[in-house]
Image (cartoon, rainbow, N blue to C red; front, top):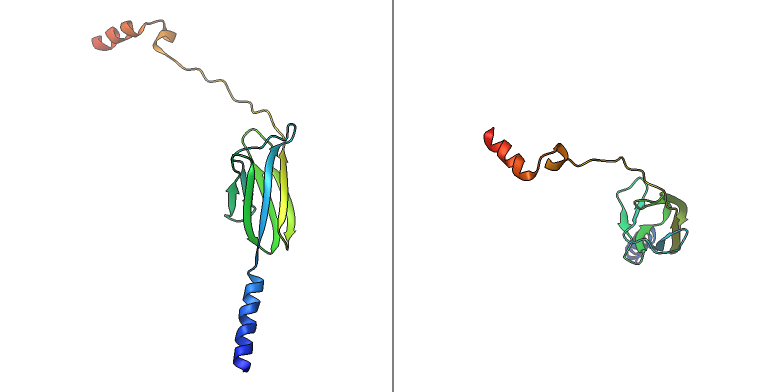
Length: 127
């Protein structure tokens, strides 16, 4: 009888310790509240993460504990939320847009050297 009780107690303890909770949420544009499709949501210092759906919705399953979720999207400032997970949670990330400044690149074509494509072909045949 003691063996059955101890075995049951060990199984129950492992089930309680391994309990997972669901984090559901949405990633939106802060000024307009429009959903951000395919934003990245990752758990800091782990390899766990997901991407939001076309509607900006995401879902993660994590064990009880302390976490930091980091959300990023191209053209927006990343956001981090820290929390203790001991029940299911709903989170909304409101990301602020930032201006991305890219350096100008010039594309060189045969006409940018003052030659037409036919003239360029003649020059190449001579060489």
